Length: 198
Length: 141
Image 1 (cartoon, helix red, strand yellow):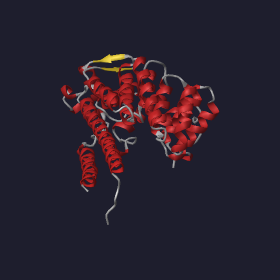
Image 2: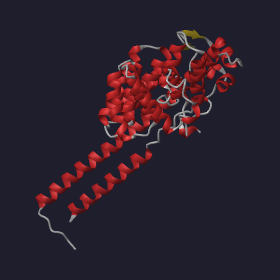
Image 3: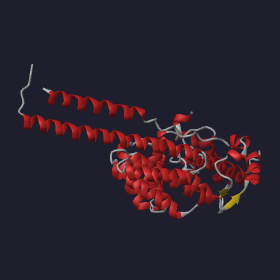
Image 4: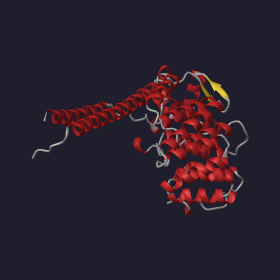
C-alpha cells in the first residue's frame, strides 16, 4: 500500500518527526546526566567528600532542572551536614531542596514527608504539619509519616493529638523511635507495653 | 518516496539513540547501609568518612572516638553517645538519613540537657535499631 502525500505535507511531517526525535533524545540525555550525577554524588559521599558530591548535584540540577530525585539527594546531603555540624544554614538549604522536589513531583509522598521532617527539625511545626498532610494521603499507614505528624502536633502544643498519631504509628508496628517519643511525652509511662505493638 | 524513507530513518535512528542513552545510564548505586559501632571500631580510622565528630555539642577526635566505640559499659549516657557516633559515621558515609534524622537530632540535644536513664536508653536503642539491626533501611536487612 502506498500513501500519496503532497510535498508540503511530507516536508511538514519530516520537520515534526525531526523535532520529536530531538526532544526525545534531549529527554533521554538529561535523564542520563541526572543518573550519572546521582551515581557520582553517592560515590563521593561514601568517600567522605560531601562538598564535592553537593557540587556535582548542583551542576546536574542546572542541566536537568526538572529532576526531583536530584533535589531530594541534595536535600539529604544538606540534612546530613546539619546533623553532623549543627549549622542551621544547612538545614535551610535542605528545606529549599525538599520544597523543590515536592514542587517538581507533587504525586510522590516521600518528598513532602522529607520536607515535613526537615521543617520539624527547624522548629516550624505548622508548616511541617502542612507538608505531612500532603504526604499522608499518599501513604496513610507509613509509620514515619504518622510519627512525624505526632511531633508536629506536639510542637504546636496539641499533646492529645500528638499522642493519637504516635499510637497510630505504633499500630503499624512497634518501633523504638516512636516508643522513645511516647516516653518523652510521659503518656505511656502508665500504659502496659504489651498492649500496643503487633 | 525518498522523503518517506528519510522520515522513517530519522524516527528509527532517534528511537535507537534514545534507547541507547537511557540504557547506557548506569543506575545510581544503592546507598550504603548503616553500620554498627563495632564495624567502625574495627575499620581503620583512615577510612572513616570524617576525622572528627560532634556529639552532644562536644567534638571528638579519632582517639576518644575509638575509646567510645570500644566501650562495653551500658551506662546510659555512654551508650547513647556510642550509638550516636555509629549513626553519625553511617550518615556521613552516605546511609539513608530520612528514617533517623529526627532521632539523631534528638540524641544530640538530649546529651546537652537533663534526661532520665530510661529516655537515654530508649533513644540509644532507637539508634542501635538503625545501625545494628537496620530496621529502618529495608534494602539492608
